[in-house]
Length: 171
Ligand SMILES: NC(=O)c1ccc[n+]([C@@H]2O[C@H](COP(=O)([O-])OP(=O)(O)OC[C@H]3O[C@@H](n4cnc5c(N)ncnc54)[C@H](OP(=O)(O)O)[C@@H]3O)[C@@H](O)[C@H]2O)c1
Image (cartoon, rainbow, N blue to C red; front, side):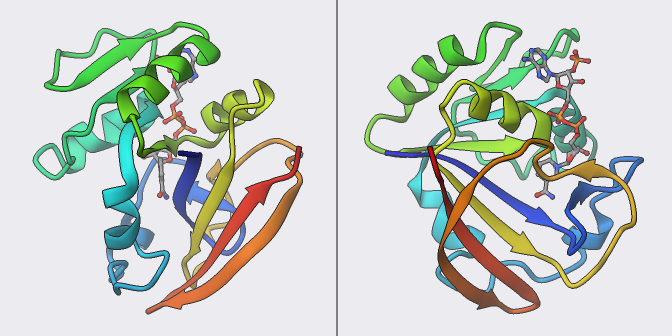
């Protein structure tokens, strides 16, 4: 299994606008059945981790759409309880051990945001980055991965409007 950051991204490196809009992403057809499309990626996932803003976006926009994989949400806020979701402010390494245990022989999906993924990278726990680049620039917003991370490019493909890259973290 691997710990994978899978995300959609603007061409200039943002995963959301400054006001957390994903309209530029969700308005496009992102499930083209390509090798790196979400339909292909999702069955590999056994457990997920995300930050509070990402969870808030799901609550606001897609409460029924979230596939109920066991999910850890990093936060200091008081969110309402949700099936299969655990809220934590524990050390990422400690939570990662729980994610791996829960995922079994499947992968761990780091959903975002970028700084949380960076925290996993800081702890040496990020294995792969899969990015779906949308044909748009945003100019500002939430950065995809605000760290210096060395990557090796393993695969490139096209998924409808998206240019997809799969990278391995170089340690
Ligand atoms: N394009 C895509 O595919 C994609 C993918 C994922 C996310 N997104 C979007 O990107 C944006 C990301 O927002 P964001 O940059 O604010 O990141 P985020 O990770 O979603 O949320 C950041 C918040 O998570 C909490 N947090 C982070 N690390 C923590 C830790 N170690 N312990 C406890 N709490 C921690 C903090 O919230 P508190 O301390 O306030 O609780 C922090 O302010 C969202 O709008 C999301 O919807 C887009």
